[in-house]
Length: 501
Image (cartoon, rainbow, N blue to C red; front, side, top):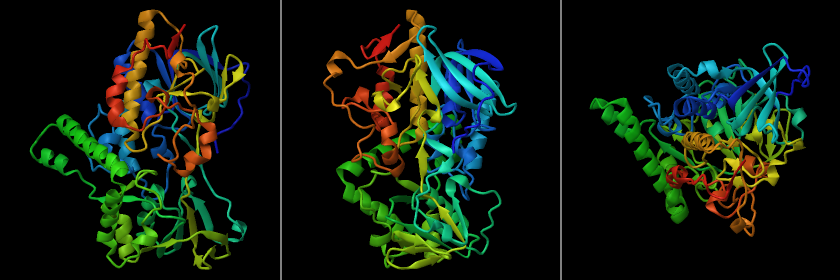
């Protein structure tokens, strides 16, 4: 659950500090934000407030076996820092990469770890944000004020996974764990393991556990699309053999991957059946023609309505082919002493049950927000390009892409924030917020995202918490990086959508 340890007092903080920019979170977005500010706006003072004891976000809090990226690091890595390893990387490798970014750019001096934010308030009189913070190292309350709030906290709760309520769960005599709350030192050697779920976490956990477990069963309610391929990028390997500089390799490889991802995403809409068959053929080539692909690996939805996880070197499917793992496609009727009983009447016995069942959406870091003394109802706002929100001054939120790497958008937003801050300085303005223009007032107001476009469970469960969107490109969170990479640099900061004071 979110860290809710109380402040000793919020009215008498132990210290008050001012910074031009307050960055929330030291994950992939927050570290990128600090880099962009220090390089593009070196005159701005900044602080990064991080709840955990170190940087990394997901890559620090996730502890389940085999934890790895499901995006390639050539595009998930920052545009300014070449990635030299295999495209799908372990959490340890990603943390090492982020540590190099921090060290090479002298960012550590800006980061305050174990700082838990409980409250954020904007005051239009002083034109300041105030953050009430618990310093977890000392137990003392602190207060930070700043002109601009840069929300880089991610989009889900790191310490609490989504656990469905199944009948009779208390009867189970084995060990039930959630992938988001992995217990330290869990021994699964020669144990029967049942993994509930079929998303990216399950696809990572199953091959990792199968190496030591007696057997691993993946129990899924319905199949997920997976993409199978070598954990290597041929053009990067070839260029490296030719002695091409890493900076060039980074840029060329990124461009090639992005070109292919754009083509794949567009085909998912224009030729979904062709894309589906290509994805299934990749699995069929490992598990064999006789495997029941139709039941276990053919989803009910078209490709990319939910995230397509990449399975490096097909390890999940090789484990199935070798008999180390198996798949059951069914629904849970109830738990039993030995495991679970499915709706078809089959009992799946297990020593350990892993619920890889997703997470809870985290909206604005689960922080209590106020604007001029009034509690903020985030759902009542309308988003400007998925990063600013009507009625919320001097704040930008980083929310990445579903069909491309998260960091691609974090870099674009970083450029935008720096451009906006420079524009405000040049025009002598201290406050900016977005507002619907006269031509927008008859625009339909819609949910954050169209379920026909993208509908993972965590978003559908949390839509009532998220801002709303319009039907114009400016007033929605566009999932098209290939359009936004050209559109973001051309954003007109003098457009009527931006209201300055």
